[in-house]
Length: 470
Image: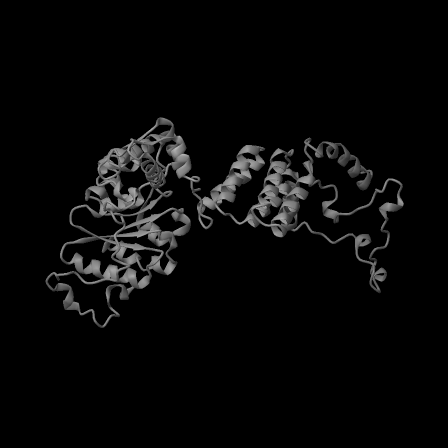
């Protein structure tokens, strides 16, 4: 880690740290010195213009901003701990980072994990060290930190631990999976929640009337406002983007009359609400988990909802088809053997036809599995058998079941005494099949649901015949 502080840089002379403050401060690459808040002029997007300028304007996240809370102390300039802000888009991560940077005596640097490399990280840390000798603390904001490689994250460790920089990292992904453990242990992880409907409503009304926003240029009907709140889904940025698009439409149509945003205006301006879903992140796993559990719980409507979210977000249809095939055996099994056929058929449609037509086959299989009688007996039976094998219960195959097709097999006693079931009128007869130590062990226990209702009465008869009198 020594080269983080210029030890391997021949141009970094020790005495240079004690020079008088330089004007202007050392140059950095343009990509490094990018402000996190974006443009804020009159032509900037509405979401940028309406970014809160102080804590009083922040909506939501009261669990993190109450008096004495670590995040409030940081914003007010009294906190010194680095933080990882974890939450969905549009919940205020970048806003809070900007407010933290505004605290007394702090300088601000911003990196985006989409464009910055280890060299950029080291350059900011070196600059922060020089500032620290003059009593200036540097806030380093890293957006999308989950996209930083392990090497890039490791490059931050010493600077964070020694408080050369105050790190504010933002991520939409669960940091337990996306941020290296040493960096997590040196930071507070603060989870932001989606904004509530009332917060979104207040935000939209503020943007409509505030001079930084629309400055009262439009009015909005109650049903249009309700629809915008629903479209936002707790995402402030999405809400403001939708309002801006609707306002532009209303102003274009108004002419000499008052501009009014009504429900048809919103609907014509907004094609659809963007789905919050990252195929590489924890939203992928959360939605997939909800899909699986809805299938298992026989809630066909919820299953279709999560299927739709995956389709709209562009999820790989092969992934969906694989989950359906697994669920057909794991959750339905022998209660309805045709469920697996439906799932396999849907996978074939995905392979041979493709999207968007294949989404109908995926929906058909989803409905089939969700509404089918449920049985976990296949899973339980297999895992019980696997458990016995792992426990060492795997005795020799009975000699009469062994392969007898090669020369010399009968001399070894293989296949001698085997009874062919089709020679019996019922197609089943008494004969030992499992190893000696597993004779009489029951793995498969059918339920009384669906097809297994008949199996539950037939299976005991089969076992009595096959195992014979005891």
